Image 1 (spheres, rainbow, N blue to C red):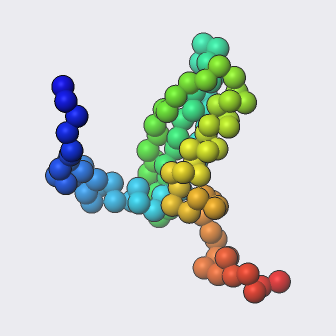
Image 2: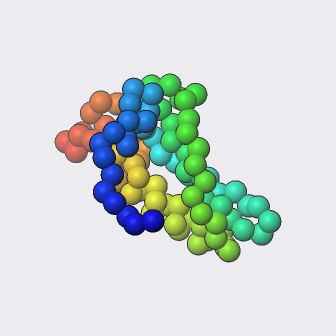
Image 3: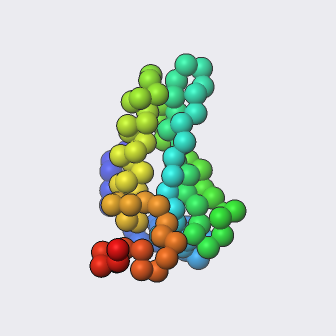
Length: 98
């Protein structure tokens, strides 16, 4: 099967139901299963913390390697790669505050 370019309609599943994924909080957890460490990404809606999407990504032979990959992936996926945690205050990034 040859690779071909997708169409815009291929992304229709990201309609109103999954629009919250554009601005969600991305975290990870490491699960040990049969001597392997699974990286599991957790996407949480900022407005409704009970709405989550959990996706297993890959498994690694050591916890250290799994944690390293999970941290990199979390920064790449999150909306703000500098700080993936949600801000509590609207002016939390104001550098003029002491």
